[in-house]
Length: 167
Image (cartoon, rainbow, N blue to C red):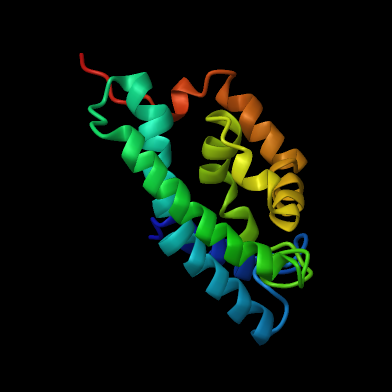
C-alpha cells in the first residue's frame, strides 16, 4: 500500500505511461532530472514555504501561537528568495524544472506554492524573477488545478481546518 503522495504520483505515472503526457520523463535522463527536482521540492522548497504559511496564514486563522512571527517570516522569506534564485537560473535554460517538458516535479510545487503565492498573497518574490514568474503562471493556471481550487472553496478553510469531529 502506497501512502506518500510523491510515491503515489510516481506509481501512477509509471503504471499508465501512455495515458496522457509522460509526467515522470520519457528517458532515463529525463527521469533523473524529475527525481532531482522532486527532491529539491520536498527537501528545500516545501519545508521553507510551510513555515511561511504557518506564520502568515494558518497561525492567524487558527489562533496558533506564532511567537516571533515577524522575524521568522523575514528569515524564511530570505531563504525562499535564495531557493527561487536557483530556480530562476534553471528556468532561464528550460521551460520547466526537469527540462522542456511538464513533469511531476513542477506540479508538486503547486499545492504548497499556491497557499503561499496566491492565497497568502505573497507574490513579491515572483515579480523580480521573470522565469520563475512565467513558470508559476503556467503550472498554477492549468485547468486541472483550477478545478481543485474551485472545489476547495473561496476561503480555503477546509484545506487547513482540522477534519476531525467528535460525537
